[in-house]
Structures are given as structure tokens and as C-alpha cells.
Image (cartoon, rainbow, N blue to C red; front, side, top):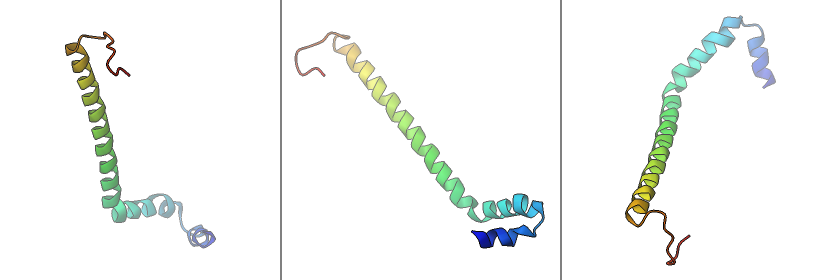
Length: 75
């Protein structure tokens, strides 16, 4: 890590803060976007699953007597 600091020590500020990040985005941009896309897809599917399970519970409770407790294996 100390060697990297020595390399960048004599460089202008725009190389450290503009050119290098742009190069990183250019080289690894596809990887970054695919990882972010996968995370967004996972969160969407998780929210969809929660909504579907909630809707299923609502429908089952509505058509099986509301909130009345039965003695047959109720949690």
C-alpha cells in the first residue's frame, strides 16, 4: 500500500480523483453494473415474495372464517 502512495504522490490531483476512477469504471463497469443489477433483482424478488405470501395469508384468512381460532393445529 505504501508503494501505491509513492506512485501517486507526484501526480496532479485530477489524476487521483478524476482519471483513475474513470479508468476503474471503464474497466470494471460491466462487472459493477451486473452486480448492482443482480442485487436490485434479488431485492425485487424478495419484496414480491413478501407481497405474495401476505396476499395468500389474507385470502386464506378471509375465506376460512376470518380470525376465528380453531383447535386443529393453530400456531
